[in-house]
Length: 240
Ligand code: 6PG
Image 1 (tube, rainbow, N blue to C red):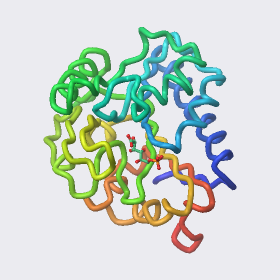
Image 2: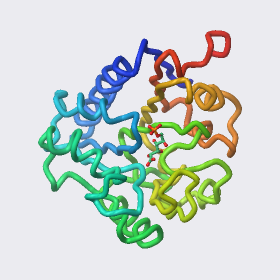
Image 3: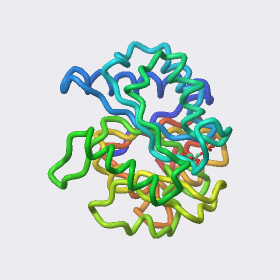
């Protein structure tokens, strides 16, 4: 069952999300001595990352990965890595040895292949041989995309063993990206999905409805999904 928390506004979403991510990371550290966190980009999670930077997480034992990246350099203003570096990695003192950047500058296919190798080398695997992340932070597009998995895209039909995929024609600019596969999001121990603003209300509602490749967020593993949304992005009470 998906956990849905509604908050009064975007700031309350960020506070709640930072608390939940901190809780999940500390659970992983307590149970396994390590924690693997993957971050998304976009405009929603920045404030959460700022609050995470001063949260009680043992960053020296926590590895930071990415759910997706644009095929740009790390200094580019479109870079998800740059967003994370400015809001969390630098202010939070996350050791560079613990940060695993998706190398967008390699391009979609080479970048995806390289990242899959690094994930395979560093993470424990599940019985299906997929690397297991502890916490994945996701936003959601108005079309229901998560990471760079877009409605009806071929990436949604990737083999069960797919770890990381190249995206050539993203409907959300820039067109070339690297993304974790849907399978990777589904084997992660927990996905924390943030949604703020009325523009996301239909996508959140569709995510909680019937699973469909037209709404990639609806294909996430429901029992491992925590949605934290403000009132504007939350479905009307009757739909909950
Ligand atoms: C990206 C993000 C993407 C984002 C959603 C929501 O690289 O663009 O990872 O998946 O989370 O598009 O974006 P906003 O938070 O800007 O609405």
